[in-house]
Image 1 (cartoon, one colour):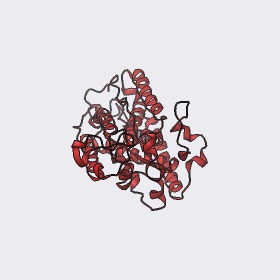
Image 2: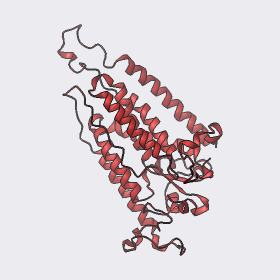
Image 3: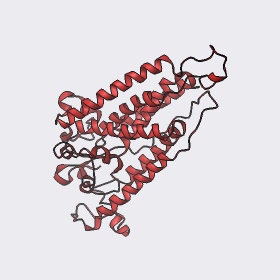
Length: 334
């Protein structure tokens, strides 16, 4: 969001989760050696896309830009022919969307309301809100590129759990470090899907071809997206929190049986594969479950006790914004 938008309404601005680049593309440079792998029909990810678009339409209807009082400096509503669906002036919201006040009223993540007013539901609702149509399109295109492939390979239950818990994890980390701005967007959940792709590749390493190229491609995509997150007014804490959650969830939910397990019944007694998963997969599963439980528990306790994550980590604010000669970071986030 623009600096002017950051200064709207009680000094709070919008931290949009997501970047303008469509670099969430999933690498297609590797494939499973087992040609009999089962593939599901993807329907949950398209439903997520429809739900996000529908929520944005409802938000714009409620926003009703023509009824807002704008100064001459701010300008007029954009695309006024849309009536109440028209966008806020670009000086207020350059992403072509609603006002920060509307987003806050409809469930954006805001520390005071979560902690002081006990509105913990905002940790979930903020995932379904977007700062503007550009923000929405970038995230939904990314969701289609990543999510459909994953849902086809692992089914709607596991990918749905990864998406929702990663979004929740991103909201948790964001609320621990950002207090004076609101945050919206599905990018924490999207980074969770990226993280799960990485852990899935690692835990199922032996059954893939071209795995080194796939790993380098995936690491490059993740690095680029996280690097873009250090730009001003982008909530990179949600990205990091979502990525870490998805990375651990991938070890828990996405391990594949080792090669030869499906054919074990056709092998004479005493032969073939003895265990469905390899030893390292069981170890990674156990470690990840423990880390997820501990991480979510500690984060929730810290949040509702009103602790500021920046007090525990004095350099962590650089994960979300690095000041340069061309821009300054919002001191309220420190």
